[in-house]
Image (tube, rainbow, N blue to C red; front, side, top):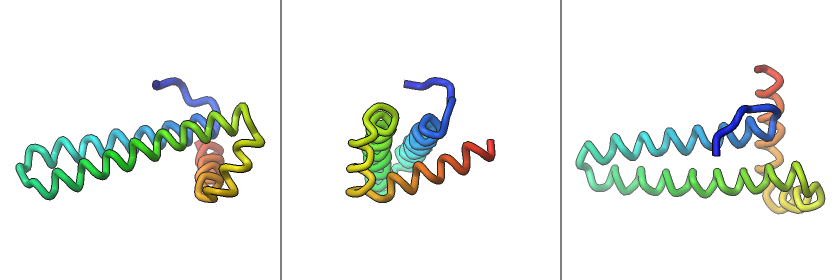
Length: 94
């Protein structure tokens, strides 16, 4: 689901979506190259980014509506908090 970016959580999700779109473009190019190993690696890259996008979307929802759950997620997956802080800096720069 695409929508306007209104805050740093939206920015974080939009960035994850953009990275997934880029991975899909890489996969399309790999399919045209007819190199099996390149295509397989690109497909794994797409799967990775799709899973990461889903995790970031769930984290953003938790951060917005369930702060206690977001705290637990941040303790178990510290990189989510790092992504959130980075998104805040980048959002302020925009």
